[in-house]
Image 1 (tube, rainbow, N blue to C red):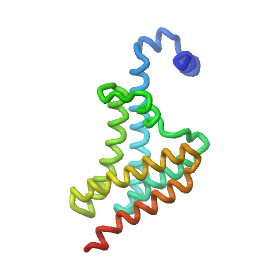
Image 2 (image 1 turned 90 degrees about the vertical axis):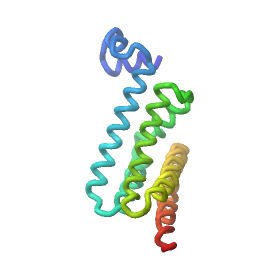
Image 3 (image 1 turned 45 degrees about the horizontal axis):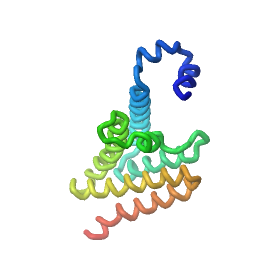
Length: 165
C-alpha cells in the first residue's frame, strides 16, 4: 500500500510512523503544509529580486514555467489532494484551501501597490485562475503553451487599468 511504501522509503519503523501520524490524513496534511511553506519561500526569494509589482507577478509565472518544464512535474499535489478529499470540513481540504488562498493573497498584495484594493482583489482572482488552469493543462502535457497563454492573458488583464486611466 501507499503507507507501506512511505515507511520503507523514509526508513522508519511502522510504529514510529503511526506514533507521529495515527491517521493517514495527518500525514497528508503535514506534507501539504510542508510543500506550501517551501513554495512560499521559493516565491519570496524570487520576489525579493524583483523591483516592480509587474516583475513580482512575472516571477510567479516564471516559477510555474520552470516547474511545468521540470522532469518531476506530475501535476499539482494540492489539486490531487482536493480531488480525493472534497469535504470542506476535512483537514486535507482545509490545507489545500490555505495554500491556494495564500497564493491568491500574495498576488493581491502585489497588485495593491498599483491599484485600489477591490480592483486588486478581482484581478488577483483572475490571475490565480489563469495559473490554476495552466497547471491543469500542464498535467495534460500542454505546459509550455498553457503558461505562455496564461502569462499573455495576465499581461492583458493588468494592462486594462492603465488603458482606462
